[in-house]
Length: 293
Image (cartoon, rainbow, N blue to C red; front, side):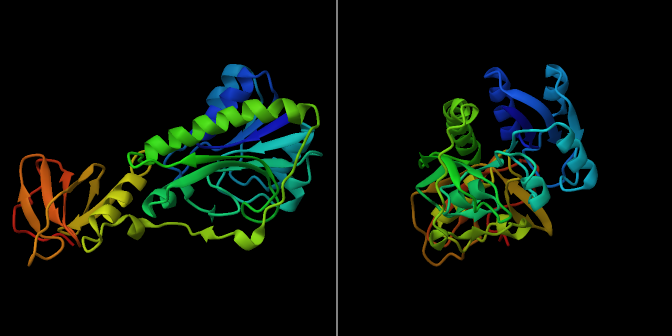
């Protein structure tokens, strides 16, 4: 079974390395040389060169140049893991076995963009790792393999990313031999259960101090590394927040966003229903009694 691999993020690299360790027949790799929107971007050419696998930088995976190169390799199947662009029909129809995609959610629920971030920001208790055969829709094709993953109270985006990646790599070990033998069990998605998460922008990462302490904590966890971090604005400048804890006391007659106290490394801030503490660079000129937007 000849595999063409497409990817451009850290999980793509992990999956590719796993396939190579399983002696999968990778005939070519499409990746990106740079990315302005993937916080977890990974240039797979380094892995390709190390293992003597042909590769191509494909800014437009649906272009004639990319299509001609992929067709020349005659792949039986394409693995597309970590690629934030839709594949068009001509490319989807190149391999006889189809194109296998990956989505870190419990499809058909939570299709669309930024599933790890949204699952944490919304305080979900579970998510999933789903491999599915791609069609012209977004995350709507038949499912090959799916595992449910618990989201613990302690999980931030880094921990959940690692948890999902580990689960997905075990799934690859399970289904790769079945694919090679032609044992493909496709499970159609129930589209009536589907919802789509939208693309986030910088405003989605801005802390609104009127939110509950728990919702602020969820936002900070959701945007932790490898993502760009939650933020607030002070003196018209964004200030990143990567660490936050909820303080167990209530304050009456204090407005959300007021600095209750500060020391060299932290700020205590009134939230919508209590207070939170954030770690902060010591050189930021914020003092007790100030207000944050």
